[in-house]
Amino acid sequence: MELEKLRKELAKVDSKIVYLLEQRKNTVLKIGKIKELKGIHMVQKEREQKTLQRLVKQTNVDPKIVKKIYFILFSYSHKLQKKKRYY
Image 1 (cartoon, one colour):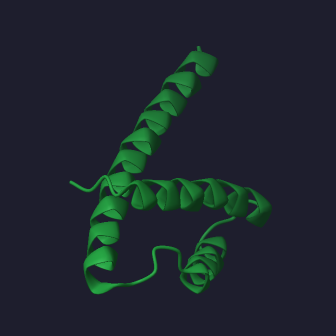
Image 2 (cartoon, rainbow, N blue to C red; image 1 turned 135 degrees about the horizontal axis):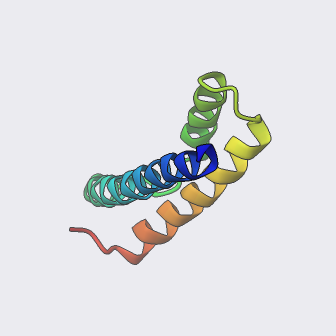
């Protein structure tokens, strides 16, 4: 059935998203450690805005959705870096 096939495809995409979120988290922690060692502020709003602008241009997904998702990701990154749970 076409519906089941599409659902399996979606499940694979979701698994990839979760895997990429884990990779992003690990990279954020490494960046946080470097920022701390170099005395760089953890939160860099200008960089976040440039990232959002770049990502919105790369996709046909509604920009509001991209911004909402990345607001959550940025907030999580700030939380991780403030806890100083580096690997």
